Amino acid sequence: MSGHPGVVVHHDAVDACRQLAAEIAAGIRQRAAEGKRLVLGLATGSTPIPLYGELIRLHREEGLSFANVVTFNLDEYQGLPADHEQSYHTFMRRRFFSQVDLPLHQAHLPGSMVAAEELQSHCAAYEEAIEDAGGIDLQILGIGRSGHIGFNEPPSSVDTVTRLVSLDPITRRDAADLFGGLDQVPMKAITMGVGTILRSRRIALLAWGEGKASIIARALRESPSDDCPATHLHHHPNVTFILDVAASSQLNGSQ
Ligand code: F6R
Image 1 (cartoon, rainbow, N blue to C red):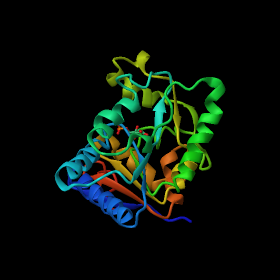
Image 2: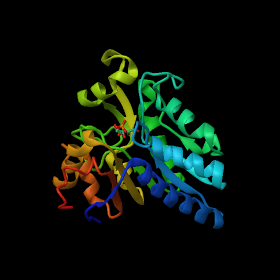
Image 3: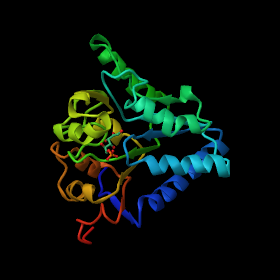
Image 4: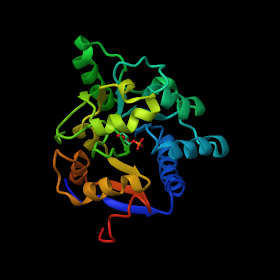
């Protein structure tokens, strides 16, 4: 079970997300016709915002229903109340859940204030819930400049599962503006593991802009290693890197 990620370069993020949203819509409708559910793994951050925008448009203008969709988010900061401005619970509610007809009991995120003594059972229950739902059909990923997928910071091995992690200094610096200062950025998060992500049937990693060009080149070129967790995606048989021109600019046409 290994291959090399496919790479698709689009003119811009909106164009890329229109195509990916169409793929998701087709999957949802096909499952609905079979009386089944589609299980989506979701990401937060700036990267998937145009994807949520397009899915919302499909819901409003083309009648796409999310009634048969189950979602699992990759990660959540620890130590923030779920209704904190910067929690991923808030992000998902504002940017997606409140704007479509996804039943809220079908949307899952790791807790944001999990007590130390409950961490192990909380993380195990998240893994179990994914399995009980039949596994993730399509996992959406962004990529951090540290090479993280989810919040699997370097070093993260291929067999990691949902767990508490410490955020890399690069990741905390990149989040500082949103939080109003580095000292406000949480130190820890709960994230699905690399192993959890690799169990998804299909994976789409999205990246836009020049700021991602060098980590995208590393993620595609380097051999799989814990030092750049995104390289572990090479082990998956059905992964596509969906890029805009700027994010692909250090690939030199050799991909
Ligand atoms: C978010 C997540 C992270 C982000 C990554 C990129 O749920 O798991 O891996 O995808 O940090 O963040 P942006 O999109 O803000 O550049």
